[in-house]
Length: 419
Image (cartoon, rainbow, N blue to C red; front, side, top):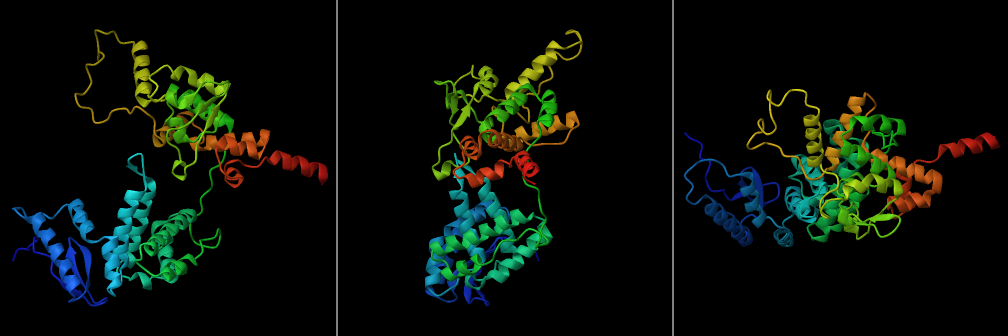
């Protein structure tokens, strides 16, 4: 007998919780106390939505995941879960994860794009839902969270620091649930009692922190980088900017009225905290940047499209094959290329270009982020911690100490004289 894929979802009893549930493409939707008028009304809403989606469809293919999620989003909301809880029906972890992930995708948005934070929340909550999705929120405690953390160590092989951050995101989800009155405050308080993993006291993998990069490595890499990327590295070393700030610089963002130029990024890491960011460009950095300012004010200074155009121009100038032989310019281009060079570098493409340069030079691979650490360390060594804090744009000196390594030469000098 053929399997009927488009049967209406059935109103069923979930024995563990006493709730009424329906299943839509593998997703459980909890309706409230089984047999109650409220659960019947919610079931009718789900049923009406299901019929509306399937009206006039002749094929037996399942609904796309986006359609299913949109249907559930209209039924499973924080308001609906709050109403269900007030009716005496407890909320499950699956339901909380569903509404919280939607909240994360709406909240963690910058310049119209969903940030990496929302993606990391989805990653950890997906794993949490697979193991504890059927649990009620009030029943999920520190022991369950600790067991889940152990699974992250053995199954995912995440580093200790990343596991601590992901567990913190899980606890933050319960804090949000308390604010939405989806669970008791004691649940969040109990989970907050679970401390983070300590170095050397867990089986979690350790990672080395970002260190400085030696000047000889940078100098050895520069000849093997595209001209524009090499200038990005030179500018980066002189300003202690973040990689993303180097990639996004435009002429309109720079105040050139004084001897020292001031670059105010249009977007930066801490702008959502209502903090301003200013990068000071001295004479050496100005000399590097000057030739990239002769363009429209809103155009990015460092462009992959421009870098590729320069490379092709050099190939034409160094061409040895006569123009009457071989390919001529424009004859071997595809009508609809699968990839087009971007108008600006991204942090990932900037890092990849540096990596390729290191491989060509046959040296140890370093990353652009290490340039910021190196510059901060040099500034701290020559001008002190406060100067490094101002240049790096940190609100506290504690953050600067993460970036600026201590001047060990001073400690060696003191030790040699004192002891």
